[in-house]
Image (cartoon, rainbow, N blue to C red; front, side, top):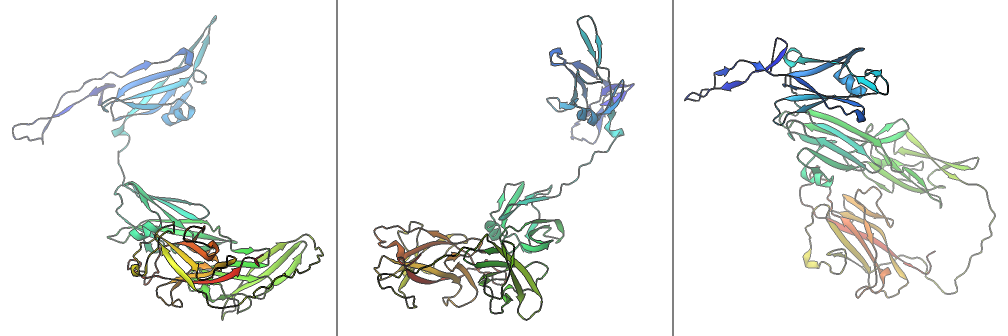
Length: 491
């Protein structure tokens, strides 16, 4: 579309094909007039002026509208509520502009007569040819990373840019491999992908912000050919796990977290004030302590109705230490008289001895069929569930209960070998295990006569990292330590 003597004109260019189909030379005809018209679709009952202006070519843009009281840009008109919109013809070659102005706007003139009111709107549209105004350009769109978190996980969303997924994704310091993507529940649909990373994952680092500990996940998009970072992103969230917990029986548990600022710290070397009070469990990132309020050098102080306990956490061989506190709330002291009730029948004292225990691996969660000795070793994939059953053999006393004290996995049949990963600690699941053990109930059936003689639990298949290689097959051995108790004496 061209402008000639303040009138819109269209010019068509035709490619002439002459025998050899030479399209290098084009013939252009003369311009002819194209009338721009204005149409009103105003309905008085709606009390809104509705105006259509056009047609225009792609090279014409609405810049402003002049009213008797001033000039408003197209953007200002929309802010004011005039609803300026652009519409296309059915073939997309022409465009039209529409405008809606309420009768109540102060730019609308009113003339009242005998029993009627005349509303009028005077305006001049200011348009401009784009080649006199701006240069059209389209930039490549870079990948975009966003994320959020809840009380347990990071949620990361990566949107592909103009070039698609032509990059490598690093979570922390590890490349997002297919196995790692499956572990982090990765999802992809052609335009973006997402991952869910637990707070306890090894790719997450911890840092101190003020008086709180926060978890951070670093996400990097890297060009695989040049190694250049296409995008860097860091998601930091509150560390929601309880670090110190006090129980009514005086037992205190605390978790020491290795932060990013001390990469050389070995959590296994941490102790309380008493050097003999080491962690109940530790790895390269956490140390888990269990102690009582009157042990391990704990100091007590009474403040009003609160018992404040002061603890020290330090590294063996170093003078630096970290203080943490726990408290109990009490209201008053009550004098109680206690009389011990002696049992009317003999009972067995606690003692150590050998138990005949069998541990089997079921085919599924019904525990109706089990693998035989000739089936081992079994081939399992990561995250595939394993259904274990531990049975107390030979005993027929229904009042005896089998209790699992500890259960752990090693890569060797020797239960004392390293590396080792705890599945059950003191009868409870490992609190720092990202895929914790699931206990299953036992009921009487054709095979099970005494449910208290059986314990069933479910474990997700995993592997130990060795030289940063988790792709090689590994042989895992599961070990268990159990004890029996008389249910008539418990509680």
